Image (cartoon, rainbow, N blue to C red; front, top):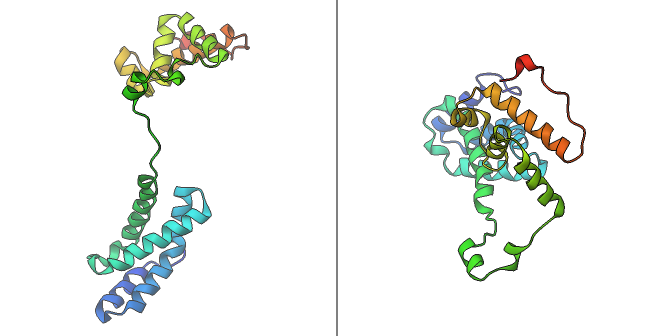
Length: 190
């Protein structure tokens, strides 16, 4: 904690427990508030939202201040409450979903739409890639696999997977009429 001397939060919480003084707990929370705000700003990337998260976290902490057993853990306890309060923001946010089976059964025209011609060209270009380059690219882009997971599945080294991904993208650029990035020297190739 950059803004406070090392022993200060613990002594404030001990004072609050010994005297059952809400003012001491309030001083402790106020002393830690700047650090909680910095953490919340880092999580949310938004000052206003960070203020809201810290406010809700401090309310939760205030309601359950008696449950904190170790006074030395107050900083971590509050930071955990801030992190969980931030996560609650996204629990509440529910994206609208469509039941795929119902959409297929109703023969929704959105499913049959051909889409963008550039997208169709890109799909054809991907299909024209050699299999050694196409498979890792599709696994990464469409499947969301990490380099390590692709390497494990294809029984390659992670470096070989990275090389194949680089070359697959370069070949796609060439197929689409764009200039290719400089290639990797052959001694680095798999």
